[in-house]
Image 1 (cartoon, rainbow, N blue to C red):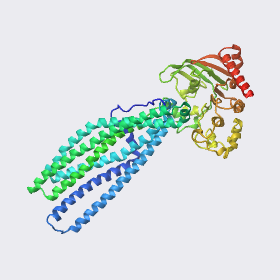
Image 2: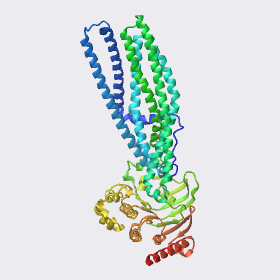
Image 3: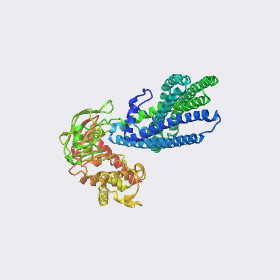
Image 4: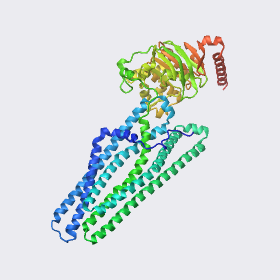
Amino acid sequence: MSAIQEQDFGKQKIKLSTWKKVLSYAKNNRKYIYISLGFGMITGILDLGSSLANMWAIDAFIVPQTYQNFGWFAFIFLMIQILFALCSFIFTRSSGQLEAHLAADIRKDGFKKLQTMSFSYFDKTTVGYLLTKLTSDVNRTIETISWCFIDLGWGIMAIIVGVIGMLFVNIQLAMYVLLALPFLVAISVFFQKKILQHHRMTRRLNSMIISYFNEGISGAKTTKTLVRESLNNQEFRVITKDMSHESLRAAIVSGLYMPIASLVMSVTVALMMIHGGYQVQNMSLSIGELSFFMNIGMMMFEPIRSFARIFADIQSSQAAAERVVSVLEAESDIQDTPEVIHCYGDVFNPRLENFEPIEGDIVFRDVSFAYDQGQKVLDHFNLSIEKGQTVALVGATGSGKSTIVNLICRFYEPTSGTILLDGKDIKERSQLWLHSHLGYVLQSPHLFSGSIKENIRYGKLDATDEEIIEVSKKIGCHDFIEKLDLGYDTLVGEGGSLLSTGQKQLISFARAMIADPSIFILDEATSSIDTDSEQKIQEASQSMFKNRTSLVIAHRLSTIKDASRILVIDHGQIIEDGTHHQLMQKKGYYYELYTHQFKEGQIEQSLEILS
């Protein structure tokens, strides 16, 4: 495995816009926020009420040693405790409901966003990073909103109520708390930067670990064949060691912050008690009032001590929130214009009634293209394909064959120049309109988890079982499907893992064919199929390609002899163009390539006969 790169959030400053974006999801769940904050504030007031009740009990019953009207006091105190328990329950339940709804909303939007992104986004972002952002990072962010911010609101209310109560009872003792607050603020600011920096790095390393797990599992076979087990293990140990060290640093900084904040508050309470003790001796303060300050001091100590934890959690979650927002605010490199969306709709709300048919005339007009501002793959490229033609693209790896096809499919946008489809710039029409008319079969097909029947039906969701069987017979996969225990209801496994590569390829052909596309594209689609299956597909392709534009990227030149045109591509330019017969007569690049493959095929056949 190579080092995995991702956008580094570790050096960014805290942005309120990050939390503003995440908190925007709370609009549809405002009632839970209002309930949580409202009842959280009520619990703060009830805390003050309990302390005032204790003060009254000491001065009215304990000091004078009388129990007159004690029953009414006990009843009032009991009601306060019952209300406190009820409000705490509602506060906790609402916060939990807010957490569940926010997590669901963000994940739905995150998944929806991924459906709109262009190929280039997935070229730059690994599966592991995306999984981390939309799972653990979302959990971390939502927990902060649902609990930390709510606890922060409760704590602030508790402090405000406590300060008002202390000022009402004794201004001198209350000043100790007010003087301690600036010290707590200064400590928080001092630790803020370091806590955030360490937690950002921890989240980034956590994503790398998940990505390594993902690549280690998906690439297990490659790892075995390349004997990379030891090297992969060493690389992973380095990452986990860095993660451990960074987590330890974050824990140390957070661990220092909490006891220092607690120490400041404890010293404040101690000074307040010493001063209050002198006032009791001087008869300027009652024992009940001193007890009130002890209670209220401890009551205020709890939210202030919690602020240390809350603040550390918010700092930690800032990195997770930034990563979540980076997905939610990602913009696709390819976007339809507002005018196109108005006419054709978008990918989630298509206006199918405006989807006109495709004839299949394709024109490249002075097109240039480069991946990530690198070396140009195409440079002032020109090509004209007439509707109904079957055009084969031949050339060395990296010559630009797949790039030409990807540009036609609008998986990428040209750096410059124009691509016309039926005489109209493809940018003037919807991506969904174009993709809904494509039949694309890849060299390495991907099957979705489910049955064979479901995978073929993905090409045409309203296809009947009879249509699925008919297209499977044409492609040549019906026989092997029928031999399976469950036939067309056989599960294919994740990515088609329960089938052979050739079987997956045949099913992907059936899936593309059942859609009856206007433009058919085969990207070295027969390279993983045996000779018999290839022959069946070639026979089916004759009817499949009829009256529709087809582009074939071919490795086996024997499969494209009947193509209308064969284009030989070299370094992004067409160096030969013609039919198989014409190019063989020229005795150029295609002739040499074909004769070389033909001789190799003869040698292989001879060896098979001898064996």
